[in-house]
Image 1 (tube, one colour):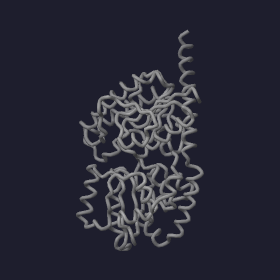
Image 2 (image 1 turned 45 degrees about the horizontal axis):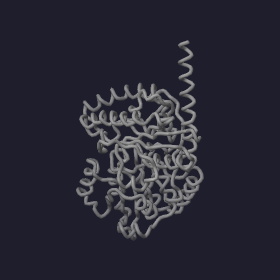
Image 3 (image 1 turned 30 degrees about the vertical axis):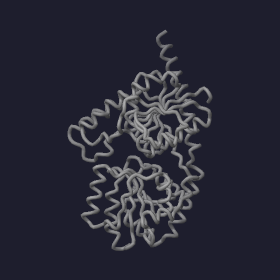
Image 4 (image 1 turned 60 degrees about the vertical axis):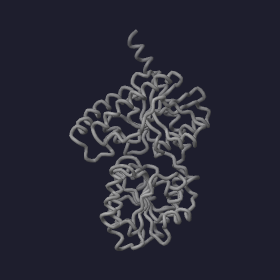
Length: 398
C-alpha cells in the first residue's frame, strides 16, 4: 500500500454535499494509512479549505465558478471549458501518481490518454438531473453526450464503483459493464450526537411535529412534493412544520417559495438556506421524521445520517438505496408519503423501534473504514489490471 499514490479528481468542491463528503473521507483515510494522495478540482470553498488544510489540494491559477450546467443549452456548453481545465491540470500532475480516482462528471471525460489506470466512483451516470423539462437543443446535446460518454467510459475507465445495486444496474444498462458495489460510509460518531434544543430554539420548533428534508433544493430532491404533502396534512396534523435544509438559490427553489406564498404556508414551511454540518446534525435530533422523496440522483447519505439520531425515515421507491432500506427493514419505502407520515404520527413507537434498528445497522455496516478499505483494494486491482492489459497489447505486437 505504501507505493500507492492516488490523485482524486472532482470538478468542483464549492458545495459540501454528499459527493464531496465521500472525497474528503477517502483522502483523510488514505493519508492516515500513509498513502500519498491529492484532490484535484477547479474550485473549492474557502470554508472547506480551512477545515481540511491538512489535505493536499491541486487547483488551477485561473478561477472557475461552480454552476449547474443543465439549465439550458448554452450553460451546458460551459462543460467544455471545465473538461479542458481539468485536463490541463491533470496532465501537469498525473505523472506523480499511480492511479486516478474520478468522481462526478465531467471528470470522467478529462482523463483521456493520461496513461494511468482510472477508477470511477460513480454516484450516478451523467444526465440532466436538475432539468426535468429540457429544451429540444439541450435534449439533442444530451443524446449525443450519452453516446460520447459510453465511448469515453469504456475506453478510459479501468473500474467503476457504485454504492448500491440500483446504480450497478444503471451502469450495466448504460455501459454494458459490471461494477463494484461499495456502500458509502456514514459518520456515525458525529451524527449520533446533537444539540436538539439548539435547533428547536433556532427554528421555532417547540411543540411542533417536525418533518425534515435535507439537501440542495432541486427537482431531483423533489422538495415541491414535500411542500404539497404538508399543505394536505396540516388539516390532520395542525402543529406540522416542514424544514427544508439546503441551498435555496436555484430557480426551482424560487418556484418552491412562490408556491408556499400562494398557498399561505409560511407558518408551516421553513427554508433554512445552506447550513453547516453541525446545524444539520442538530436538526436530525430535533425532527420527528426525515422525509426523503428524492428521485434517482444524489441524497444517499441523509437517511442513514438521520438513523444515527434514531429518527424514522420515509424514502421514495426511486431513491437508489431504497432496496437496502427495505431489505434491512430500517425505514419506510413508499410513494405514498402522506399515509406514511400520518401513520408515524399516530403510531410513533412502532417506527422509533425501526429507527433504533437502523441506527445499529449504520454503526455496524456503513463505516467509512469499510468504504475506504474496499476502495483501496479496487484502486490497487485497477493498477494490476492496467499493467496486465498493457503487457498483453505489447505481446500481441511481437
